[in-house]
View 1 (tube, rainbow, N blue to C red):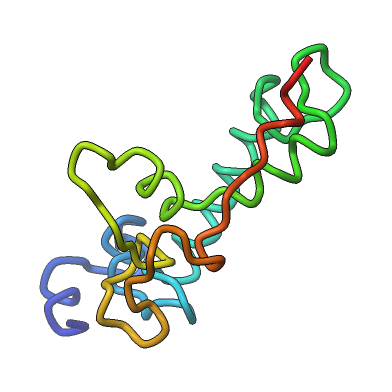
View 2 (cartoon, one colour):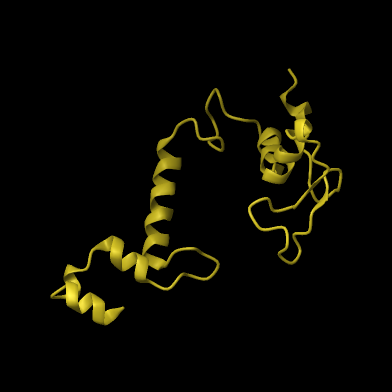
Length: 126
């Protein structure tokens, strides 16, 4: 890869951010390298802090109560899929819906299994 870069760029300073970022080795447990990881984290932080309606902000008229926030943090994609799949008769779901079900520890479980936690809606009752 370096010899190909030398053919295209006359100096390391000329390497584009995007190209350089794609060529970095991925950070542990990440899909991108340290440069893109830093950029993505900074962007997310700015979006979160700049969005007055972000769900975890406190002290606003629309803010969730501590109990509601605690329940929201229990929600998982597996639970959302289980709760909204009645038309396809889904009976099992992998606990981590973002990973392949054949990965270790992610075997499909009954939607009633305690590992696929439910949230309690009683904290929204007025």
